[in-house]
Structures are given as C-alpha cells and as structure tokens.
Image 1 (tube, rainbow, N blue to C red):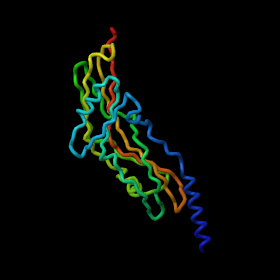
Image 2: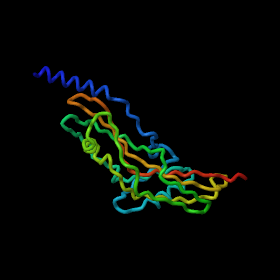
Image 3: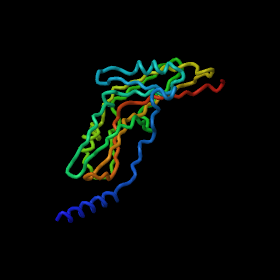
Image 4: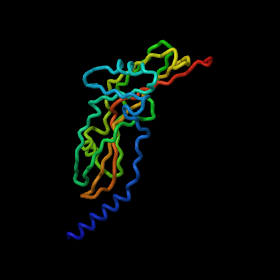
Amino acid sequence: MGRNANCHRCLTLVLLAVLVTAIAPARLALADDGQSPSTVQIVFDGSANGSSAASVHEAFRDPKVSRVVVVDKALARAMLAEASSLLFTIRNVRENGLLTSVSRCSVVDGKPLMTVGMSQFKGPRNSYACDAPVPVSLVSAAVGFDVTAIESLNVAAEAGVPMTVGRRGVSSMRLTSTPVYGYYSYDVCFGQNRIVAGTARRLVGICFQRDFSFRSDD
C-alpha cells in the first residue's frame, strides 16, 4: 500500500514538472536610488492623505534629473510568509525590488514657464504568474497582498518647464507616468520537492519622466 502511494506521488511530481515553463520577468528594472544621477526616488505615506506633488516638483528643479520614482510605503510593505494548502506549499518568498512597466498611464505637454502636473489614483490590477495549479488565495497569503486587487494610489506630480536646458532653448516638455511594481518571487513545493517558481507584482507607485524638445534655431 505504501509502495503504491509513493509511486503515485512520484508520478504526480513528474506530471507537474512537465507542465513547468520559464516565467518571464517584468520588462524593465528601475535604477536604485542613488545609483543613477538622473533618477530620484521619493517614498511617502499615501495613507496619510499627503501629496507627493511638491516633492516631485522640487526634485525636477535639478536639471540632471529626468525621472522621479514615487513609492507609497504603505503598499511597498508586504508581510512575506510560508503558506500551505492540501497539495502545495509556497516557500522562500523573496522581494526583488521595484520594476516599472513600459505602458504609460498619462502624458501631458507644456511650454516654457508653464507648470504641468498629473495625478494617478487607480492603477493596473496586481498580478501573479505560476505554472502549477496553485490557488490564488495561497499566493496572496504567501506574498502578503491580494494578487488580483486594484490598488488605490494617491500620487501626484508637478514640474516646471524651463526656458533652457544647458545652453539649448526648450520648445516644449513632456511629462509621462508609468506604473511601478513591487516584484516578488517564490518557490512552489509538492511535499518537500520544489516543482516550479512563481512571481507576483503589486502596484506600489508611479514613475514620472520628463523629456524635452528643443528649438531648431539653437
């Protein structure tokens, strides 16, 4: 009887392993704060009803800064844990930093001496990827957030449009926003055997980037 149970267990492991395919990570990683002079990271508490607009405006006063990453610390804080169901256990949950999407949320253009701004209150749905039939609730329990929820963000940005950048005259400035995710990975185990890796991502902030168009007579 025990031998038949072991054979059945081994066969199940083999079948699950056949289903495993590589999981593609999100497409673009953000530079760490302080590693790139063109990127500034701002962490604020969105649950306190504060605005990030003034901080973003101040960061963009530096002509070397082209990108400001605003992260809501309440959303970026996750309680990672091992989680189990009847068939599967999720172990080794890892926080892998911040990632940004290539999909834009908003775009606004401005002329010199104008102040342009935008805000983002709702973002894309959280998501997960796993090539084993693991319940969604189990993944959510392991990573510490609902992997199918739509998060609310109280994030705003303002930036002044300068007349010149260096010695070049500015004709216009474009401010764009893209979602920023907290990126997590984990191992799915059947019994004591790791059978597949999984990922999850949670919307935690917005990346604001500015780009300039210059006058042709410069």
